[in-house]
Length: 503
Image (cartoon, rainbow, N blue to C red; front, side):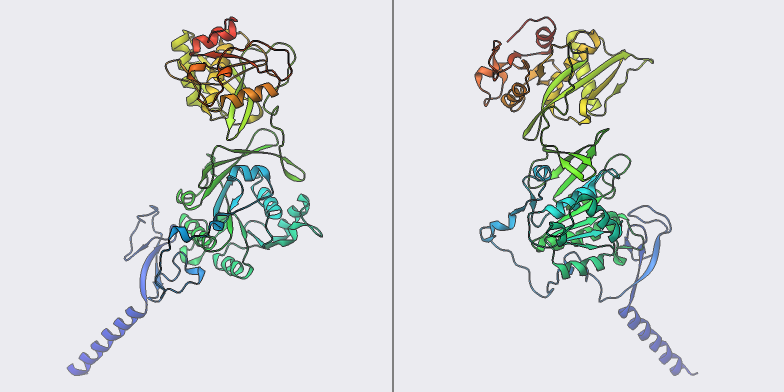
C-alpha cells in the first residue's frame, strides 16, 4: 500500500474512533457507592473501597435523563417558573387522619399530604404491623399502595387477616399490594394506581441499575428514596419508608436519608409488650410527643389510660431509693417512678448504670449532690431505672432523680404519695419547669397528697400564684396536693426527710 492509501486508512480510523467516542463514552463507576470517575482508580474516593471501579459504557443521550423528578413526566423543554406564596392553595397542607390516635399525636395531628415519613425500629418491634393498620384505617377514600421488598403477597395477607382488617365491607379491601424492590417496577405501579398513601417496606430493599450493581448501598438508598419522595411532592399523596436500624439503635444507611424526609419516627419497646413511638424530626409538628401502644394477638392497640402505667402499686411505706417524678411528654403529663440504688464500687472508679435516663445526666446530678450536700457518691456505683421501661429525657426529672439517689444512699424513704418536679442546676439550685400547674393537677387526679417543686417567685408566669406556695392539707376529694416550694437541693432534702417546709 502506498503513502496515499496509508494516509486514507489512518484518516478513516481517526474518523471511526471519533464517531464511536461521540456515540458512546466510558466512565468508571464504583460498584459499592455508584461514584463515577473519568479514569480508573484503585480506591474509590467516595466510599474508600478498593478495586470497585468498573468500566461502564454511558450513552451521551442518557446524561441526566433520570435526574430527581424525571419520573414525574415533566417536559424538560418547559422553563420552570415560580409562583407567589399567596396564590398557593392552603388545602395542600391538609392532613390525613391515620385512624390511630397515638400515631396522629406523634405526627402533629395526622399524616401531612405531600410528605415523606421515615420509620425505624428494632426487628420484630411492629413497624410493618403499625403501617399496615394505618393503611387500613386511614381517613381517605383513595387507594393505598403497600410495597413490600421483604415479604411475599401471601405473607402480607396473613398479617392482614391476623389484624382483622380484611373482609367484606372493611377498609383493608382498598389496599393494593406489590412485592418488589425494583424502582422502575414500583414507579410503573405508582403511575398506574395513583395512590394517596404509599408504604415502602423497606427502604434497604430498593434498587435500580442506574445507582450501581449492589442493592442496599448508600447510593441506592439515596437515589431510590429521592425518586419516590419527588413523586409524592408533586402529587396529592404521602409516603412511609420503613428503615432498618443498626446495633446501636440508629437508622441504617446515610444520614442524608433523614434530611431528605419530613419526619423521622423511632419505635422503641420495654421489656414487656409496651411500645413507644417518638419523633426525632418533624417539620409539621412537635418532637416532644410520644405514642404508647401495647402489642397483642390483634396487632398494636392504643393505650388509652397511661396514668398508672409507670407507677408501682404498694401498700405501706415506700422503700428507700424510690421517687415519683411528674414529667412532660409533649402535651401529656406522666407520673413515673424513679428507682435508684447505690452500692460500694468494686474498683477504684465508680460506674453509672442507667439506660432509661441518660448516664451523663445521672453523673451530673450525683456530682451536684456530692458537692452541695456533702454526701459521698464517688466511691459508689449508681443504678438508675424507670418503672415501665419508658425513656425520660425531660429536664423536669432531675429533682426527683436527685431525691431518689439521696434516699438510696442514706436509706431514708421519701414520703408516700409525694410527686416531684424541677430542674437541678450545677449550683444546686432548683430551676422552674414548664406547665407546673398541669403537673400538680395530674398529681391531684391520681390521689397524690404532696408536691415538691420550684418556689413561687421562680415559677413560670402562667402558673397560678396559689400553687407556688405551701398549701394546707384539705379533706375535699378534689383538693390540691400540699405544695412545697423550694429553691435548692438543700431545701428539698429538708422538706422531704425532716418534715421542715420551706418556701
